[in-house]
Length: 111
Image (cartoon, rainbow, N blue to C red):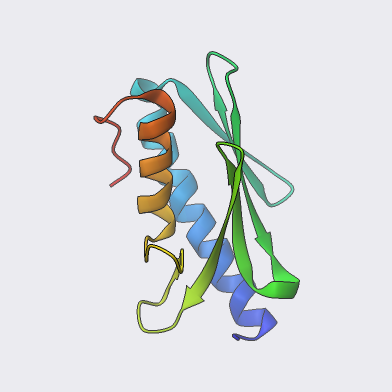
């Protein structure tokens, strides 16, 4: 497990990169990204749902609450990124997939 200082730095960087990617995509996507008190939220224009991205320092994970599911991303040392252990997806790729599924829009891109 990475130490707390490294976790805070890396999770802050990962969530900031995700926020910037979401902001670029939100005009065409039907959603809006907002950050409040270290928590990143994605709100949908049709009020159908909300995705919540939260760093969880005690367990050194980034949690995503989306589609009635909790996704717990762990630090992957070789990739130097937070990934979902089950699929190997990184934070941005997983978020892109979840947005595409929720909005039924394969054109959404966070890259």
